[in-house]
Image (tube, rainbow, N blue to C red; front, side):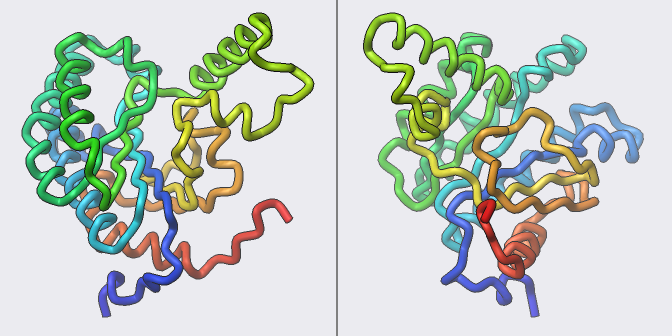
Length: 240
């Protein structure tokens, strides 16, 4: 029996977040440059997006590019940005065909102008789609996000728009870039690393974690469904 057939569709996670790790190692194992791994990782993005839409997951967040990634060699960053633009343009018709809405979180102002424009157009073109919300974390880090939220909160308190004594968890959530997006029920990380690497620190407080040795370019639909099956075996306590 396939893992897809084992998934209980009545107990699906509403939101799945993925740290797509292992592109570089996958490429190096094949004697290729790191960008070769990123190029093949696009196939896994497509597969997991289709899998999430087919099974009924409502939100899928992919950690595509962290703020720390800007420190990588310029050649790799430039290639990643070019790949990002090409992929967004190429996949927009498919997203619309499959009724998938694209969203983005992160310090998007740091993106090259061309990439930012293509991203904005795809977001606008898919805004009315309702089957799946695909969230790209681009130029994102949780410490940046939380620091930015604190600055905004401090400014609103200073301006008299907000009373510091009235601050709650919900208030903080509303100042994050994920405002309006439910917290992930399940976080998946590929390639064997067991850490969350500055990803959704606030939002992952009560999420279930799933780690797999599979490198991201080898992560396919059945891999995604296997993670869902494992998730459904767990008892969620939410800190109780």
